[in-house]
Image (tube, rainbow, N blue to C red; front, side, top):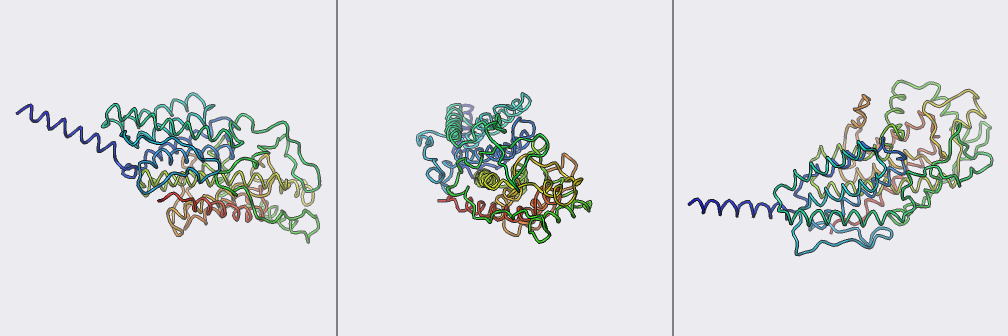
Length: 431
């Protein structure tokens, strides 16, 4: 009789292991995905050189890695192979092998995070290892050794393939060279000039390969001419920045600080968008496959938004409001926030927020109300919104309150971001 129960126990746990391992990726919790993106968002500020474009790029390739790691575990989704620029080669799972898709995802994210954040500090590297080990034990304890090995090998192969794909986009290891010495400031009236001893941040970023064909293109009017007469449109817009800056309310200051997201201090603007996604994916309890789709679209939109925006910035090389105001209105005026080291037009905050807002609207609904607790650790009051476009508008306006952008740069940045977000939503992921 004892032998009978032993046999039943072996069969039960044997079948349980196979059933667990062969689960559809959509049957796993999205928590494993969210934990990885929470970690990435958390280590961006303490990883040297992770400026907004660099951060957006890392989040873009991470989202793609997660998606491609688990897509073969779903009968509802298909690979993006052949649908993104130059993205035509990927490892395929062996149909004769058993995979634990949570372990595939965990291994792939551990690998791509290690690759993309190669220069992060030792504390962060330890956190990457700790999360890898925690999830390995949490999701792998019911899988046999062979299944775990198959899953880890496949996850590593996906991450390696996508990292190799990333090396040719023009932004590889940009964190080591944010300020290339080869770039020369363009002279001329109305042209951007660095504030203080600034150097130009990533002036060639607009030449990078985007994920989506045509994403770097923009159909926007050129910035307004900078005539100093009071009939000049730019003069009127500069006067608005000046007047608001001289009379900022407590609420406007709070908005400017909440969305500032300076590199080296916070997770940068693209990280803020992913932070919002993290909160909502957890709140809605999305499964692993739906979470992977969301991170993939958000990451692609954010990355392409910064390539397009930077292409626009260095094409027009528009001067900052502080320069115009100090020249034509008030020599002693200063902006509420520090001016970043790149041209003004268009707004990077507006472009990336507009792109991410469209993706989140498509995912959660166009009338989805939410509260953003992204800066709880800084003890900033959370911000609540009736929909995602409202958040994008506030993020854009925060730069006018901060004295960083003219209204026109915010408005046109939102327009360009919306176009890029829509393109990300049109990517065919479902069969």
